[in-house]
Length: 380
Image (cartoon, rainbow, N blue to C red):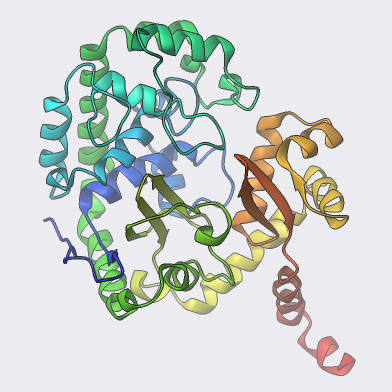
């Protein structure tokens, strides 16, 4: 059953939407991340653990091809926000993929199979897709990008070794084979893992979206703070474009993370569906969140990064150089610490700068009070 809250956008260009297709592709993404990204919610972790090995390998491949996550399937996810004809159900999504041209452009508004791969080649820190030079074929552009990409790109750290350049080029050169693999992955993941839980998931997300309908009259930055549960939002730190449309989509899979689509005049945000709409006790959810904060602190490498940030803001490459850690390791640690609220991030001149979140101390104090209420009371 397809359930969708998709009303005309308010005057501010804000809408809350749910769609089984958006949720399906987002669930696939976090299932692909479940082994490598801490703080992902329970459903993706359980689903990944129970998946057929071959299906899991295909999931990892298509969420890393052509160079690293979120891959061509992540590019498809972004593209869907410009093609709502694919939102209604899985068959509409499959029909959409079947009708894409083999080539296409890297613009998500005019996509194709090879175009999705080019869109996935966006340089780190840039919102726009890889730009083709006049007279350059898409395949040669991909070859150049894979051969001479910036150091932030690290295929070797991807969950699946098929991310190597030779395999990527071979897949890119056979878009019909790639299309078939995308279709098969969507069909199998939906039938074997998503469909049995679809009704519950959609009902939970619909309750969240409907509860936020009154927020559509607010400023988009205020709405983002509300749904992210933070004093500042991605719209004030990383996603700072001149957006005409904001789409907020509740998700049961993002855990402590927020997943953004940031392209041209559109900003879309997958936010964590509130516990009360998922049938989870809010006290239990709060305890689980605090446990993640302490998990983030229980790592020597992350503590080294936090000590560096204690002295002031740094951009990611500075942290790599000062710690001697691999870029992908630093990126993973920063992502987790940002998600649990220990660090803040902002974008400037296509670079991400990180700083300590001074408000995180309140979360730590709450955890101590939870464990030692008597001691804290006497101390006061």
